[in-house]
Length: 166
Image 1 (cartoon, rainbow, N blue to C red):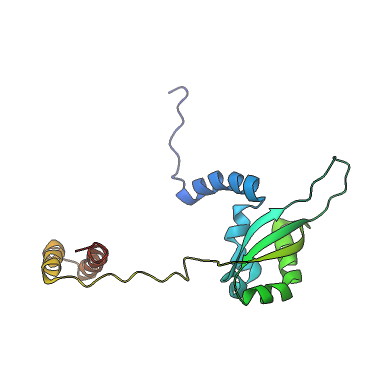
Image 2: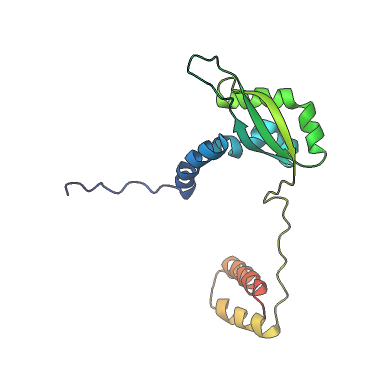
């Protein structure tokens, strides 16, 4: 048993993905995944629907003795939300600094571009099933005794079959 670790509790995939993505985001964009995930709480639901933090640009320091200067937060924003964000820039800066725990951000730069989120994307509508597909699906789930489970599996099967081309 030497060298073998005992199996512990399972680790959620989201925790593993965060451990992998966070260093990449920090290096490429100077931003943490925690800031991106908490954006709705920081900016508020109204602004978060139409904006997202893109990058933190830290000013260059020529040597270690240079005084600390706050960074520039670049936020992607669409449409009229850019105007709202501009008016609430001071509040957003204060909330981001409170989230980060120190006065990291001094200014905001707004990039106007489309911001797509999973909430705003329209869900694809599956095609209607043919009679043969409906009968095959009914035969497949027909032996399940629990009515709720059978209905759920029928809906799932109809969605899967509806996404496939005939």
